[in-house]
Amino acid sequence: MVGSVPLLRVEGLSKSFGAIRAVHDVSFELEGGKILGLVGDNGAGKSTLLNILFGRLQPSSGKIFFEGEEVRFRDPSDAMKRGVAIAYQFLDLVEIAPLWANFFMGRELTRKIGPLSFLDKKKMQSLTEEKLAHCGYKTDVDREVRELSGGERQILAVSKAIETNPKLLLLDEPFTLLSIEDTDRFVCLIKEINKKTSASIIVVSHTLSLIKEVSHYIMLLKAGEKAFFEPAGSVSIDKIIEVMLH
Image (tube, rainbow, N blue to C red):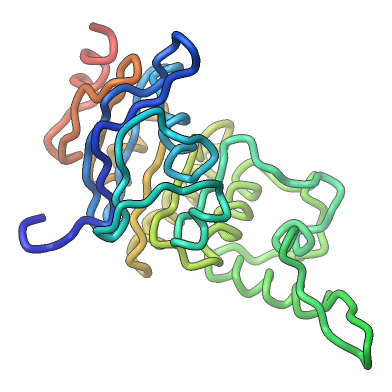
């Protein structure tokens, strides 16, 4: 990263919940357009770190620099304004609502007829179909979410996140409960996002083979502390497991 400013730089980040240290003195840098695989056992601090980066949690100490400027995201909307988006493992989707309604939930499009405003259903349907197609997924956007597979739900959530053209995309356990076909589709989607945009991506997952496949770097958290941060090509799955267990 000599001669360039990393998109994200974290210095001595810590977060405690009472006597519990969820994240402790974590520092790392991530260049624009790179994918970081974030691994570790349950309780290692991975989701806590993502929530700090997205403004859902405030750090107890430490600094975050985004595009070279120190930031302190007060809440998720603050992070989103700066170009950070997230798709969670447990998706916040309404089961009985159609895809297009979920895609635009909280940011519905309207059109004016005289002094009155009405929901622009046709435009939201059209844009949802277009955005999903960009992610390689063609479907009837009037389908309800409860009809979707796990992989289809993940694609909907990630498509919604990248629709904001984020500079940093956070993915929390995106491979959980996916079929083999959905997993392959989702891996291709992550690679396509990385290829077609300059967004950096942080992927949290327990599936080490997939983390190795999609990531440029791998960072292991252990009991809230950074155990290592290395290029993905130079660290084996056996080493990751060995460090996690000892």
